[in-house]
Length: 188
Image (cartoon, rainbow, N blue to C red):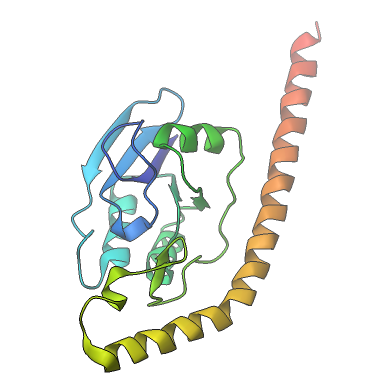
């Protein structure tokens, strides 16, 4: 199975990329053989459209799943339309994300986990451009966006809890299937 993983470097030991559309690299990993193909993300610094273009790349490159830290609504929608499921992981390396994916320990996302145009995208930290330049009106606008994003968080928290529950159910089902396969193999 070919899985696309957002990364900050070009190998299996690279740190996992926190934000899907803004990571430095996409690693296309065969989860069975651990062979990987690194592709630099040409939209990492784009002003807009990064999510849509990154989702198109995943479909064009025949990714069967995506593993990332966070993903916005445009990228998530594009991946959904292409039939590519999205799983979330936090921290660690690409290798550890692949291992968690293979063990069915990663939550399956049913919705984006970043508020649209939120100033929060790197694990709750405010982007540097909030405080770097832009004048007072820009800071007020960003603060307003941040408070709007915080109001949407209870709904996202409920979705995250539901996702965790579903992920656990999938893990348990996979364990049962494995046990059933072992029993079948023992039969003469």
